Length: 246
Image (cartoon, rainbow, N blue to C red; front, side, top):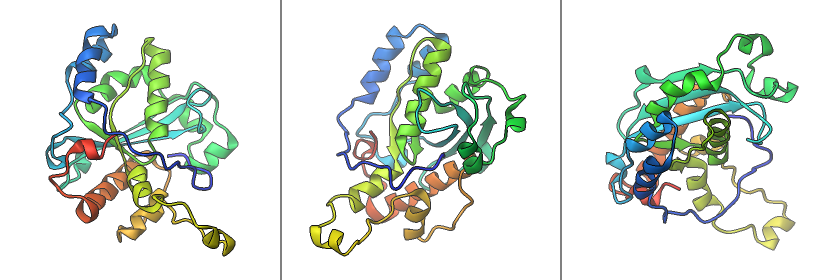
């Protein structure tokens, strides 16, 4: 994933009120493009489903910037998993030619160069494989504004219709714990820093090993492992997915 600025994450209350199962049924009846019809017709689990019974796929995008409207997707990493196992043999990564040019800053971050994407496919060519891998599963990401917003904008440009899906945001789960209260005036006076909820810092708190960042499939794997640790330490296998997704 592309780096965030100094802790660019909000502390909004999570929303578990969306009935994603009903939303998928409604969308399946109204979308026009066959790929989106198939995506929504696969359905979604009910919010009451225990997280241990939910099919999960960790997702990470490397992008040319942070705005989905003026930047594009450079690579996508997917890793299917559940609370017990990570199915690394089924992990996938795609290198893409983005709609917008690479910037020097983005190349520095994800180390994907102009020459590497010169013959890469457009997202259009990848969607017939990508969307079925996401269909019926709950996506797990670290900072949902990247993956959900970028895929929605990119699909809308290519297919003429957008896409929306539930995600479990491991950053948001960390924010519930470490951003529940703002720093007091005394802490600010002492220049105390908020606890970092970046991916690497969050993993470190759960004693997970460090990985080299900004590689799509590696960051997806890192998010999958982080969710497993979060469930083990702070939730349970019986936690309804509605308490985790947004």
